Every structure is written in C-alpha cells, then in structure tokens.
Image 1 (cartoon, chains in turn cyan, blue):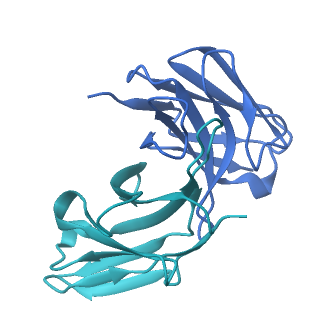
Image 2: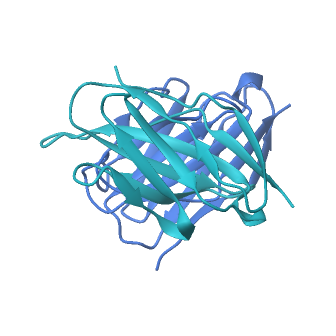
Length: 116
Length: 115
C-alpha cells in the first residue's frame, strides 16, 4: 500500500524567508511524485513532478523539490517566500503502471502561512 | 487553456436527502475524477471515469453514485446525505487514461453542509 506522510500540518514563516515542506512516502516500486498547491477557496493546482533523472526538479513560482530514494522523501523548497505563497500544499504519489489505471494518493496537506 | 466548473459552489441538504453535484470540463480530457476533501485528511478518491459512460469506484465510493453521460461532464450523487459527509468535493480531469503519471486539473469545489 502506498502512503504519503506530510509531517507538518502548519508552517509559519516570514516573508523573504526560505521554507521547506516535508513529504515522505512508503512504496518500493517505480513511482511518480508531485506537489500541488491549494489557495483558500480554490481547487488544487499542479506545481511540479518527478519520475526520474535529476533529483531536483523545478516548478512554477520559484518552487523546487528534491527526491531522495534513501530517505523516501520528496521535500518542497522555496528560497524566498512571498505572502501570496500562503496556501495548503499537497504531496502526492502514484505508481508507474503501464497497462492499468494508477491513482494519485495525496498526503494530508501542509498549511503554509507567510507573515509580512 | 481550459476550465473545470463545479456547480453548485455551496450545497445545503437535509439528512437522508439525495443530492447531486455537477462538474463540467472544456479541456477535452478523457479522465475525470471526484475527490472528497476533509480537513486534515487530504483528498480521497470517490469515483473516476476514463471515458464517456465508464465508471470506476475509488476508495470511498460507498454512499455515492456517479454518472458520465458526456465526455465533458461528470456528476456525483450523494445517495442519502449524512451529517458526517460535510466536506468539500473536488472534481478533476486529466488528459489520458494514465492516471498517476498525469497532471490533474481541479475545479474549485462544492462545499456540502448537511443539516
């Protein structure tokens, strides 16, 4: 069974600070990892995705995430946050399935608050 | 670009009532999904559909029905609303049948309140 764990329910940082949102997963096979962002009152929007290659992937608005197989992690980072980055961030994992549907499994979400 | 439209944005029903949530997408995507979002619990898949008239149960399908009569629309019915069903229901779509490998595009949700 795939599981996704986001250990921090809430993170608060000051504008201009760096932030890291943590995501750990449990699955041993070939997987896709992704991050989505949800602003208040809206649906989720795709940020970035990793399957293979360079373990650091770049997303929109200065976000990046780093895959670590040894740690079973896919943490999201931003060097300098803006107040508009305040939102809920979801990590998701899915199996690489060649012949059948493979669903996304989402973590519980981390609420990021950026204080001016 | 496209958009996913969910109606209504807010739905208030009585316990035991049958309630229907609607979703339209103009991406021309093959696959559509219904997720339930409870505070602190992430998203859980209720139903998905990989093409018109196809329906597949997700992890949380009990108590729900779905319908995909057209490629562009996917509706979800709560067969008998319960108070513990108060949540936000999110509709999403993706281009092909691959599911996990694809990017999902989400609507802004329907917030269900059961009195």
